[in-house]
Each structure stands twice: as C-alpha cells, then as structure tokens.
Length: 75
Ligand code: SF4
Ligand code: SF4
Image 1 (cartoon, rainbow, N blue to C red):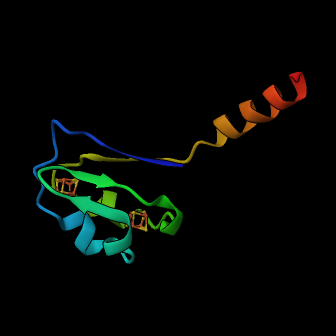
Image 2: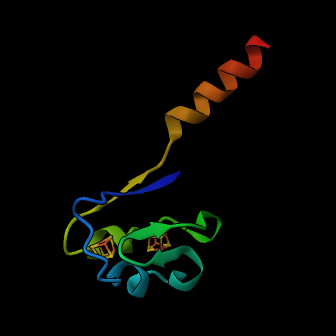
C-alpha cells in the first residue's frame, strides 16, 4: 500500500498526524505531511477522512501484487 499526499493541497496543519493512532511513528509533518513509516499503518483511513484539504490518497496496491507474481513467473 501507499499513502500519497498532494503537496499542492497540503497546508502542513498536522491533523493527519494527530488523528492517526500511530501518528508519531508514521507521519512526518514539516511544511508538508509525509507518511514515512507505513509498516505501522493498519489502513484505518482516519488520516484521509480527517484531512481538511482532502490531500491524502490511500492506495491499496492489490493490482501491483498481482503484477509482481506475474514477473516472478517470467523469470
Ligand atoms: S491533514 Fe491534510 S493538509 Fe493537514 S498536514 Fe495532513 S495532509 Fe496536510
Ligand atoms: S490509515 Fe490510519 S494508521 Fe494508516 S496512516 Fe492513516 S490514520 Fe494512520
């Protein structure tokens, strides 16, 4: 999975970090927010739903997993 923050929309307000149950471990908010440590993320989607700018996109990457398997079989 990936968490994409739209830098054009993000104001650096820090709400994503505050609302995330693992905020201190996952989020790095300086001028813009970045989800830096996704192994702690359990896909609750609070960050995306609470962001006032709708700047956060959570991508589950199910298709990418399938592609990876295809590639492995080709080798
Ligand atoms: S809540 Fe949204 S606007 Fe605020 S820092 Fe996080 S991503 Fe940026
Ligand atoms: S989906 Fe939940 S656990 Fe993952 S970064 Fe967002 S608020 Fe945190």
